[in-house]
Image (cartoon, rainbow, N blue to C red):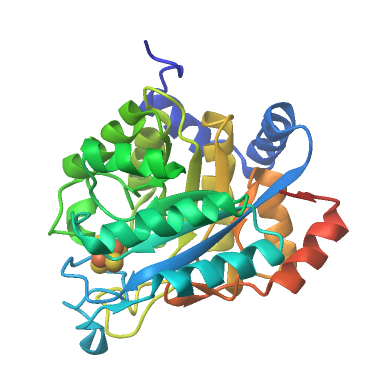
Length: 314
Ligand code: SF4
């Protein structure tokens, strides 16, 4: 049985057409209703395999098709993953997400390392999740056994615009992965990127597909494109901050129970812009200096903003 209400595309489009001040007010009220305690969830991303990816995602520094020095993958050892998890715990993060630049999760000793590291991170008292690419049912079961509670697989953008960004994996393959994750009983996370050159319609499509799930998503990571030299999107026109704020507000209204996570692009924002994002419904961020290949916010600076706002770090 479907656990979330149907969300119609027309309704999403209507929200986007509202004046921003009205959206912000409603998003803020929705946020307060569903997350009354003013919590901010701190996640840390640990990249087990970086680079050497054969996919052609037009924004990505890890694609060997775009970036000369990304031909070869770099792996962390299990001990290095655990060391990063320990540092994350010390700095107050409650969740570690292990990432790998795979198209499809392999059934080999590399996956065994992810499982083993996940087990040990869980034993440290941290929540552990992963974003590893297309994954099978049996691999999801192995991850659950190892203590992973969530799996992330982004849709990146709306279905119509998607072929301009990625040609090596279909949109329906992504949606199939999301279905498998939701059927497995693990928390499912999925989000996308704003500023890929997409239109308003594409943003509406993306939020609609994220909101219209059998079960509400656990987390929706929203990224702002950080253009990477040598990628096809290196010269794309930057978006206005207000466009992001509108996307966050609509996301909060149509996905009231979901954690909205401000991911890449936060380092480029002022404190005041981030505060507006928190008021509009963001209640999770990635902590740590690096977010895969892009710069992220310094945790001490983050904490001072959270303290000023009276947000409770989780
Ligand atoms: S986004 Fe993921 S799948 Fe796409 S090129 Fe980068 S690492 Fe590969």
